[in-house]
Length: 571
Image (cartoon, rainbow, N blue to C red):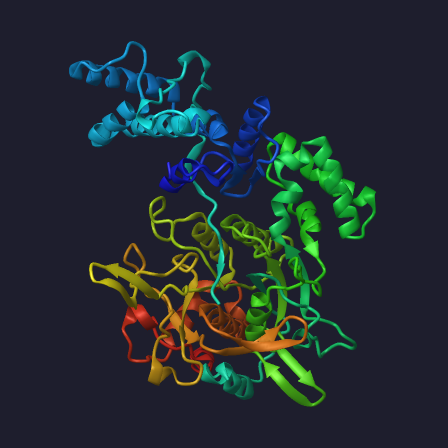
């Protein structure tokens, strides 16, 4: 069980957002159905946001529901473990002559745990933590002396029986996602375009970010009349659980509200919206994987509209990232701004909203959606994914590169999609020493999903003078926590020009800006050499083998500065 989960409950969080990873033999949808049934029996399903994907289930649970529903599904017999712990504690206290008949205080339990935790089995340690948190969360906790608060050991006859075989392999927190935010010439993309006269119109890249302002002239399709945009579709994954969680679909009152919202928000008939929701509702009732055809209809949104906060502000990160990758802003015959692939087509997958609810689960869902899109036709529909986002590696609970979002990236690459990820902006740190604060640099600071082996992980360098300035101070350094070489390459990430929403233009810093440079080079390679489509590992190998060495340490620069011209010439 993840330490951060226990910590969240111990700090008093009412409903932490959890990710449940099922065992390989258990489908996530079957696990979700099991959890929902158990929650419904306890009238605890409402507000849980229960939602299954291919390899994970997201759910918000109170501590009581967590103990009664999730722990048994891990194979833990809590009542038996607590009873065994009580017997050990009684024996311990009897040797001290310190036992009140039939009662144990939290102080006694805590002292016993501190003295004996190393000798207890994992099952007994779990029972110990549960009892401590349960007692600390009781209302009487603040009214009594802390060490005298009695511990209520469970009645073995009233506990939920454990699942056999276990359904849940691991439980962790649904981690928050953070943005990591004359560069085209630096990577020689302009020279590559002139030498090879490459068009990327036949390729499509997914930008998994905060959203793209499709009304911005930088994304106009100049091959068509009027104000046509190259952003083919936009999908808002920040609304995923609000619209289609089990508790929303299977609660009649919530279902009616969602139906009205979908019908009005998408400007479709109530009967059409009802059909989509009905298909998802049937999946939820039967514990089946969701029908992505119906689900995508609910998530689709207008490409030319970005969500704003209460003050009317919109997040510009995704627009800027997409501009670096594929911007083409013209005023008549004058070019105002060009990205690496100015005619590349885009899919806007929004996982970062105007709240703190942007999570790992939304990114996993977006990647699963990409894979589904590519199964609908004989030819691949989405050729690459750009991930200018970062999540701190959950080192207490997962091996490096094996977190849920990293595994989702590995699966996506295995399906034939090139995935490019920012290395992270955690290269600079403030350390606390006996002499005070010390400003320095951190090794092994690559963030997820950049820790995934198959993705192309991109660090940052200066936009014009990479040989002089080397790796940017903020750029995360390798190696990975398990000893693999990362980042793979670097690209410009300091003071990078790009479009911003509402006809804006500005400069941003970060490995967020570096990643789309490399996405662009990958797209140029596929456009020039179609045999590289659906061969992401070869694309990665070419980009790494043709990078320019900046003379810096391998774990700082990777193979060096990405070089579009040399990459194209090498094939």
